[in-house]
Image (cartoon, rainbow, N blue to C red; front, side, top):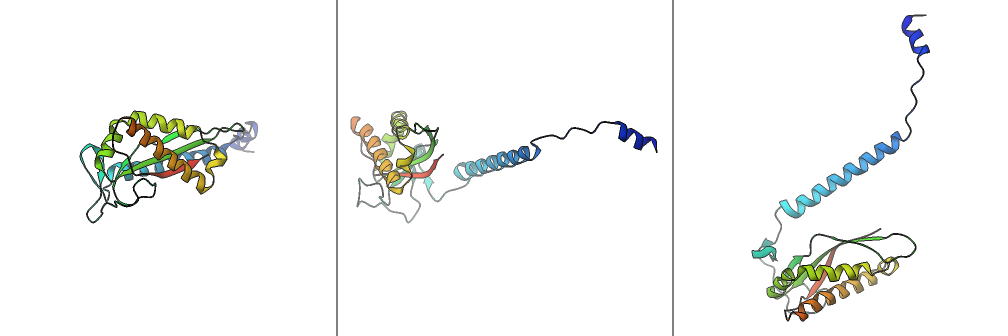
Length: 182
């Protein structure tokens, strides 16, 4: 028997590490999440969009896009200018059985640019009202499309209440550009 073989037999076997596969899976998931977040940030902030930003960060439609004066007051109004209520809203849902979360991105639309200026000027109050609205929802109520559409209308109503209290023009629509429940 050679000296190397004898040393190998004499040395105790190294203990096997537990959870190695789980750590690898976790590393892959974290890496994918970071890459996805970076891509989202680049798409939102670094890449040119089809809209042209105007003064104050409110986007105006690109050439060829017009305003639709018909249907003001609904949530599915086409045309107008858009303003993002970024960052995303992340709230706990009102569920007694288990912890549930809602992450939602909201854009408002108005035919009158003064309405979007009013939204921007009153953003802290509007975000507060929307956080209270979103966190009062029940997970099961938001599962069907009708529940999301009802919440969309309630969000529009909350925003317009703030604007009416300040005697500002109303917004014409609210869009959820991302809606994730867990």
